[in-house]
Length: 80
Image 1: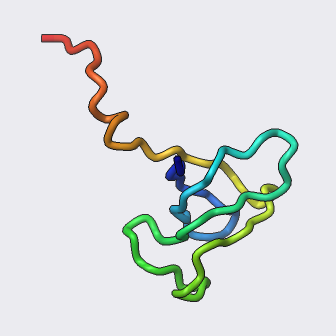
Image 2: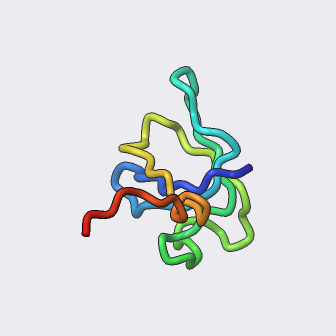
């Protein structure tokens, strides 16, 4: 199952993509599939027909994990 993430790359606009698995501590690259802007539009610096991109992990500032629909349905404590 693919994990949707928002990659924050140094000096670039954040990129949303899918990862097959989260990078481990020993990884030196991040392989993202279906790269796009936050709003789903094509990236200006990536050709429209590109489906997989490899970034060096040293360029990553941080990685946000985007919640799925299943995660949002979790019922938590509500104070009334």
